[in-house]
Length: 417
Ligand code: HGY
Ligand code: MN
Ligand code: MN
Image 1 (cartoon, rainbow, N blue to C red):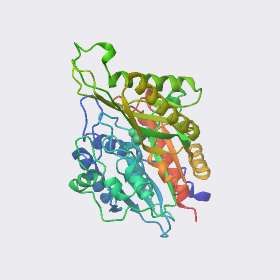
Image 2 (image 1 turned 90 degrees about the horizontal axis):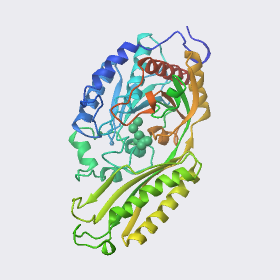
Image 3 (image 1 turned 60 degrees about the horizontal axis):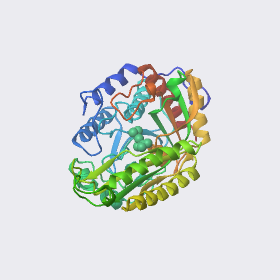
Image 4 (image 1 turned 90 degrees about the vertical axis):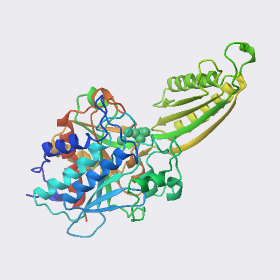
């Protein structure tokens, strides 16, 4: 039974099949505390990819892997038009959560299998995608796979990125066997949907099942460094010291002051600090730190980056330390396509989900897809807003509802001429 624009409210995904796949996939790289450790291009990431390719092939999908290791799995339509694309990522934080990214990839596969079970033919092809290196924890910047696909970065820039042990992205991609033949160039999908956990507190605070995501924060990632003078922690008088870590502490406090003072939605994080020589009785000579600044307003991010530059100069001057600051990544805040977002909202209504419209504080591959095709996202709640930790958790019935919303949204768009 099809209604106009192919609404099939009678269709629903198979939550237990989805759960089996979710549990099986998350055995790979599982940590003792119930999380996962599957950084991009690691052996665990390879094993996850191999498992997904097997499932895609078993589902009769046409699988292709591009030069950045992005995996596309296509279900043909009755017409060979631009496909409805849906997916996410399966690389994780070092001790990350089981839902981040995985829900979007397995949800898209479940939609395809539900269509097959019901014998539903779609006008447009439907394609599942797994993006490479969304997290950016091992290789910065993040969202490299979707970034090359949408033209933000060129392939060689991505291949030359190295991790902290000096391993090169391109070599690691080759090593795990996912440096594909297909050119990593956007073939203009008709639209893109991404199902993802919210990773913030708003849905779980309001006891809602679904977020209809109408936009995403912009963010700046910066590498900063202070260079002081190593010396003996004992005989060196305080007035003769140039302590790189004291200057760093000033900037860390400044980030907190800045985000508290502006009265905007600005958030700021110093997530990693590397001290050298990092010895109990040596005055820190050099400190490398990272900064992550975000807002739904691009001007707010601009102002924050400028203020951090001033804070670096002031802290360096006070301590007599040299400093430098490099922006390694900048993604603009942006609204998603309103028609796509309205399609998600109509799907949430059709499914009878308790939902709200919202924006995403986390970055996603959808940021970049939104630059080349109509894009929107579907959130499901993160219990307590917790994410990027092993305690990340989403009630399974919320995953099922969110995947049903994805099904209805993809169906509706797959019928558009
Ligand atoms: O940083 C982010 O927002 C994403 O999880 N990569
Ligand atoms: Mn994610
Ligand atoms: Mn993440």
